Length: 234
Image (cartoon, rainbow, N blue to C red; front, side, top):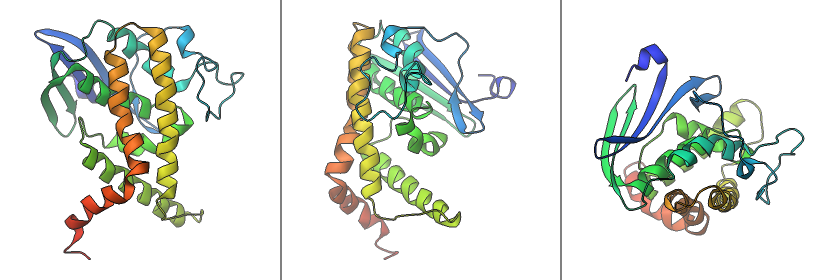
């Protein structure tokens, strides 16, 4: 992978046997990591803002004719139409710091990529996840993602306080973020169902949505799992 030449800071490759099914690259921008797109995005009905519009969407069609998250996902969804959910694939994620290899199911590999693509979109509800995308962890477990989400939220509050903005270290704000993402994920799943017949992308969204459901409902339980790691500090 010619990282320096093309200025890629992250590359996702999903292989089935000797065939590369998906190959997506991310580059640096002023707002952090963003998806590199060589091709013009498909102008599809399912990407229109008003198509299965999220009930918590804050955008208006006059300014944003397309849903930013759906637009970011459009090429990926088209490319994964031929994949089979439970097919075993080889995942390779290359960054400037390390290369991660894993043998996993197509739907789990795709879920990790879909989460990153959505996090780097201009959807207002995914902006919280941009710093997490910058320090992306492929195929992260629920515990790892919970740790990263709480850390990102509290660091955001600290930086707000440093800049004289209102800050709250109560995790209720994090719960609201994930409740909003659950709504986005549900509507995105409906969009994808209208876009392709394959269930791989739908199943990937279900996996991605697991934390959005789990974190708000089981935050106390998740904190109890993490707290022993801090026993020497408390």
